[in-house]
Image 1 (spheres, rainbow, N blue to C red):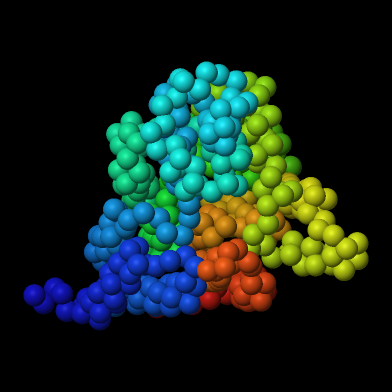
Image 2: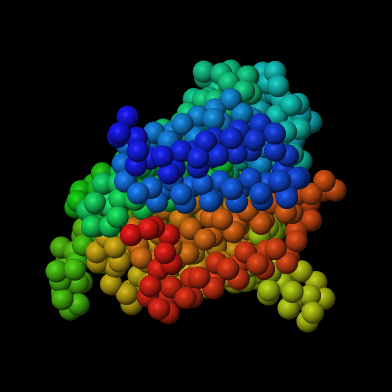
Length: 464
């Protein structure tokens, strides 16, 4: 048993994590913020101990990460109710009806459907609508087609069983995380970065709880994106573009990064040679394949009504919804003081313009010609996007987190812990944001980010 000696130091953190995950998955109420914070903090400490084990063994840590995820396998998500909408969309689609053209609320009221409601058999419709909540039930689906495919798989195998569907969706998410581990390791090796970095994703309690536990599909999106970036690094542009398009069709967020690819792979070119026809053609073909892949996945649903409903629902995230914002909350406060009302409808249109201008600046005035420069630009752009957003749900932080592992910046690791403060909004008396805790979250995150940008030295998260 001598081979186990190097791992004795993490035996206690492994046992502790197992117990804490069990408590998190099966006893925690979202409204009990103090308990949530204590469990989360304990899990982060244990994760830090495990990742920094004296004798690093990739496969040992990989198995530990999978086992932690399996703890959640039969658990109903307790921090998010979005999964009820996933199950609804899946059950609608398997019956040949598109969820983009009517809301669950319309179905329940049998009004404004545009089709014969008898075409749909929803045995658990009331339970799903109640579970997803009034806000979700009153809006059209905004989940892209590949994400919907995951919902369909759950509906095909589990039918109307909520627990069965949850288990199938969770298996898909765990499989995606294993894929991220595999291609993330390969990309780190190609970039000559510590392989240990990938475990700040794979063993991070934030990822295990928010994605595996609460069934958010950022993991599936990031799987295709990381795989795409790995192939791009190997100069396999065609399949990289296809996979990037699939990633967009899971979640639209990767569209944000498309302008940044314009200079990729041109490190060997002088600036005056950059605009040569051959280089422009390669970039144009890449963009064409990405957008063609996206359009192909959307093709079965395309109609004027779909475009209207889908874009209207997406627009709500910019001009109606507010949650865990940073810069926007400061601007909103100034708005209340100066004009006396919430200025989200106007600010929600201006902030995205600032993000677009920043991304274009990063694309045309900064040469993202190597993988590491590209990944750094992606990290900075998505971080600014979320810092200027009106709504930042905890699971959104998964994208800056994974990107940071391929750069020298580590502030998203801090963010993956601090984002837990956003759950203080869900109290026993209903929803009410604690702006003091939101301020603490962003002061810590922005403070570390500015320190890293100024000193060009990352915070120490790995023992050397």
